[in-house]
Image 1 (spheres, rainbow, N blue to C red):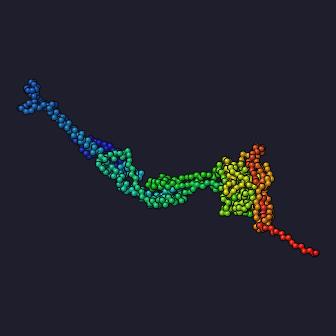
Image 2 (cartoon, rainbow, N blue to C red; image 1 turned 180 degrees about the horizontal axis):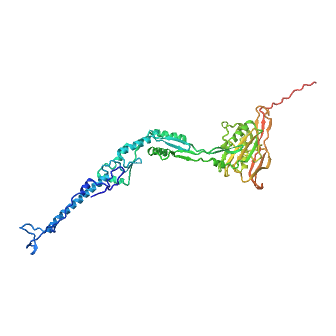
Length: 549
């Protein structure tokens, strides 16, 4: 009998498919019992039966001879058949045992010292002997130690190898486990493992050891070269108009955990790519250069206002310059609200302001920051022309000499008066300021307003006389000497009522579209300032006249 192996031959294994197992060959040569000839005529021989009486009846051969047990040809055939059945059963059992033994031996590969269908670190060892597998991984480990990889992002690159982090590929133990798979345990357990390998290879992974501090230092070096914060584009306005002064830049951030996993994978499996890109998160700036350039509009000024500071003293000019300098280059985004006081800061010497003349309670006095109101007034004039929405504005307590009535905008350091405005256009506006020795100028760039605006002042009531006075003692006697002497030193300004009107004209046809009142203001009259002396006027004594008699 010939039994083929149920397991297909593996590379490097002995092929049992076309060979007979010795036990199987011995079983196939087992002699077969001869066929029974009892009760049959054979060549040159005949069998005769004697007639006798007995239980077989008369006239039938009884087979009884001299008192011996009757024997017939049929009974002899039955004995041989019994022996044949027993022999057949034994033969079948023996064949079954031999077949199972042969199948088991073929399945578990007895006499075949080779790896089964197993993988180590993704490398198939099927068909390799133990020594061949060890030699294979000696070569792999040597190549692995000498292999380097180029990591890159953008134009920067870094070389990484197992030596970079003192890495070791600990494969010896895993090779032994792979070799023992299907070789350890009972025959039935080994057989089930090996049969499973026919369609399902088993994968083993070795561990790698490396210096964690060296890995972190390597990653930190990449961080230092790659990581950058996003930079928004910046626009500034100067005498030539707004322009992008700072180019935008995307932010880059190396992803720590993804980089660690990438390096571990490269250590264990290598990479099919010669250059490996690092995982870097890109953050876009809030305002790109392209977006900033789109906000510049035509680049032409949409409004400009100039006031004169020619007759002002040095400290007052300084205050105007300091206040307006804080608005120079200011960008006001669509929907953004701006407070003059917040931008100009508190009027203190620490913030650059000096003592100069200012209005207070109907008269001129001196204070830190005097003249700041001219800065706010100049800004107000430009904002009106640009069509910017004015949320809060106040007139002075008395008229000023550098603009017409109702065209001023007073501010106070206490915050009781402020100039607040909002950009309701679709594009940012940019403010440029300049102060010379004789003028203060505010220029605004942005989206051209719907109409061209002109403003004019209307005085509705004039020459309102002062109804209050201030009397001061003249300690030096400059204006008055005696207490009964009252001298008018400063005549209070007359008051007035006025309005500001805006006329809107079509840009193309120059046609008047509408005329709107912007404000109605009252300027109170100033106080008359008197000085009196501090000395009591002496009383005159009568003189004696000598006559002749």
